[in-house]
Image (tube, rainbow, N blue to C red; front, side, top):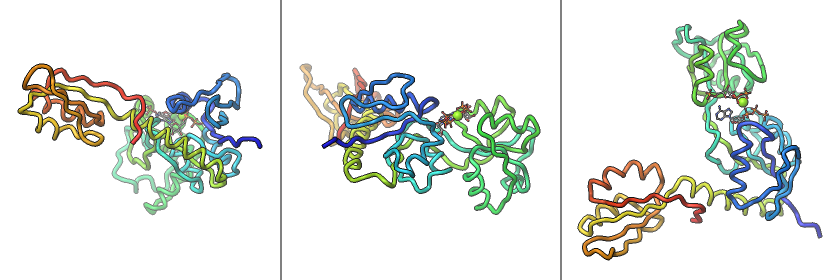
Length: 287
Ligand SMILES: Nc1ncnc2c1ncn2[C@@H]1O[C@H](COP(=O)(O)OP(=O)(O)OP(=O)(O)O)[C@@H](O)[C@H]1O
Ligand SMILES: O=P(O)(O)OC[C@H]1O[C@H](OP(=O)(O)OP(=O)(O)O)[C@H](O)[C@@H]1O
Ligand SMILES: [Mg+2]
């Protein structure tokens, strides 16, 4: 009998493409990636990869033509409410916001009542404005949305904002954040049991990759009389490993810590006498 394969869609080209391939690679899946191919097969995992436009993916998932996809959460909110949301993937972080020309005084959402808004995200805007009891006229365009107010097409826009530099270059200011987004695993409501089992394995691998990405392996030397304080600053996966150094009165402390937490406690570690602090990357982390 032919072995089932999980069919995954990733963006053909654009913001999500590279990081999507990277997360699969880090999960130990190697894909023969002829650049012009629209379909590829993994060599060492039951996976078929399809390269598609991000915006088309919700429909493919709905139809069950693909089982799972890596897609921007914002696209699911716009046109994939019926699609199952899986793990968030920690990249392509952005927000979907309303912006108006810098020169316009903005007092609140009421100012947009009856105005023209250019966007590629009509459902998201409508839903947001409806909740606020506001109605606006939408101009739906597919790209270069930020230029609309400058050419007299609209009073404001709704689009993706990340660094804010596109808004800045177009003399616009962000006035309302409608939602926050990042890349996410989106799952077809029609996925079969057999493929779901493969997906479970894939999600397990991805979780290990993501845990490892946000954590660091820390080694440091601590004077024994400060050990208790230092350990309290460094909770480990279970608890830190403490080993005696050859030099009397000192110990070596090993632990795994979230990188953000490490930067928060670094000064306190030093104040408590920690020396020779090493921070090492972790490749996979199974918890
Ligand atoms: N400036 C940005 N910073 C971070 N993430 C972004 C940014 N712009 C877009 N994204 C995220 O990446 C996704 C893909 O954006 P991209 O511009 O590559 O494709 P697209 O033109 O929206 O889609 P398609 O693949 O259909 O052409 C968006 O849906 C959003 O989630
Ligand atoms: O706040 P920033 O960091 O400037 O990012 C926001 C911009 O990035 C995206 O466009 P992209 O560069 O993907 O171009 P596109 O319109 O061709 O998709 C988005 O549509 C914004 O225009
Ligand atoms: Mg874009």
